[in-house]
Amino acid sequence: MDVQVEEEIKNDKLLGEKKDCEYYPCHFEGQDCTWCFCPFYPCQDGRTGGGLTIGMLSGKLVWGCGSCVWIHRHDVALFILESIHKIMKREKSLSNSHLLKLREEALKAFPP
Image (tube, rainbow, N blue to C red; front, side, top):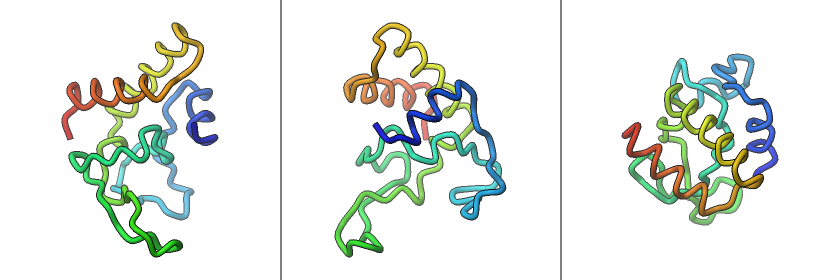
């Protein structure tokens, strides 16, 4: 898991808008920046706005999330954080299968 994702999980609260970030707003004004480093990356699911793009550094096809706003909505960010904490209390670790299941639950509860 990404180090930044682990840090956000430990914080146990939403980050909210990070207006001091040089990239803010990278998705939309008022976005929740908690999941700047998405725990589902690369989801390879266009329903949330992402898609294949040419990487600026590699020049190769990569999954791009520039058009994904879903995970930056406050309701979605909170649901994901709370759900991860519930999983961690039960399981003590977060597996890829947990994340896949959580993503589908979140998509059902909060459609893009």
